[in-house]
Length: 155
Image 1 (cartoon, rainbow, N blue to C red):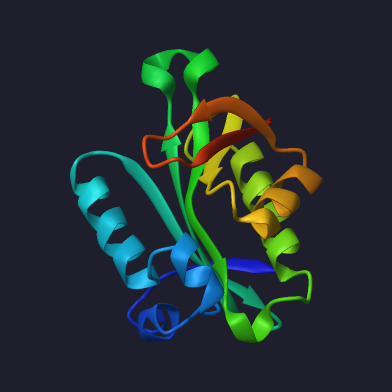
Image 2: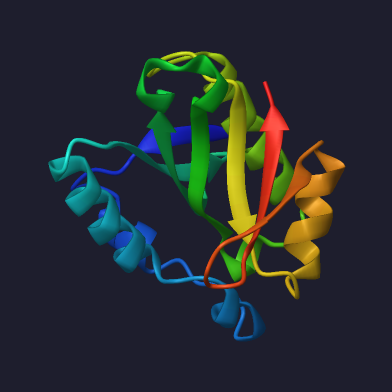
């Protein structure tokens, strides 16, 4: 499993990755996520986007951020904005492998040290909930105004 930068050479392939029809209600397009990342980075936020590769094939996409907690470690985090595995590659363990890679990336402190990795998901997205909890993510009890559940992994 490898994370690679999105470049002119691979961005079309990245935006063409798709989830199943059923999963589309849980996630925005990769094109939308890349546009959000571009705008957020212009506003000074640390945004990290990667194409997810397995055996030289692009199998997914992840968009993350880093927040230093305004200098307070207790509020510092890496977060996952968006994560997806293309429908052609689902059911092979790539999602779990990629999330382990995201946790390792966060532990490396590439953009700074953080206390947790955080993410949100819709409560009815049972597959995501099961994946994240199997890796040690714990629901915080907080919910996003959109109804998504917050979960975190302590680094």
